[in-house]
Length: 186
Image (tube, rainbow, N blue to C red; front, top):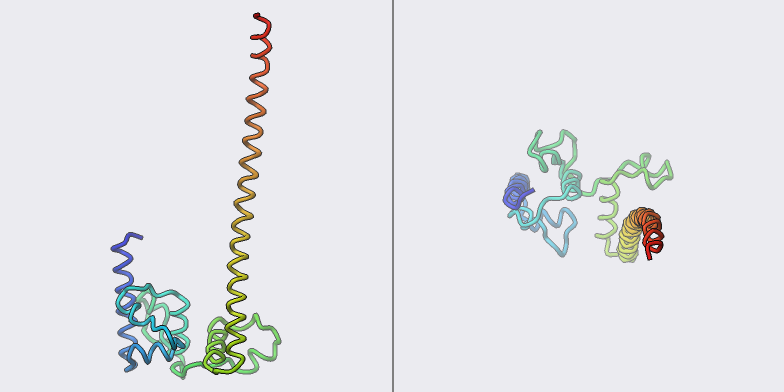
């Protein structure tokens, strides 16, 4: 995507965020706080096109406010989802959906984000533990991605070395008869 196209896309996305925020009667700061951004307020940068709206933030806005993330990201469809009570912040899945199964991996991303935000907002010892774990897991995922990337590069290098070795052996094989003939001429 060219620079001018990217700026235009950022500006259009930013305008949709502003339209939605103003339709709710919220300031940029209020909107940011409702989304869980206490120290950093990305809303101004998003609305002015400095920062591009990423799908995770769009889904967070969708979950907390009931906005249609397709509309937010593409301008397609209605601005609001048709769900009742979608504006209530930090909604949780019913207990039967999340607790009975006993499987943490069955939480939707929106549920996990809402629960995480609740813990972070709690100002308890669990907040510190969660933040520490998030950092550790993020580092582990990053390291795993780097390792996978390194393994792919090593595999590629092994293939290239193998090809080069074969080419060298082939060249040496062709060179041997020429040296023998050259030695017989003397």
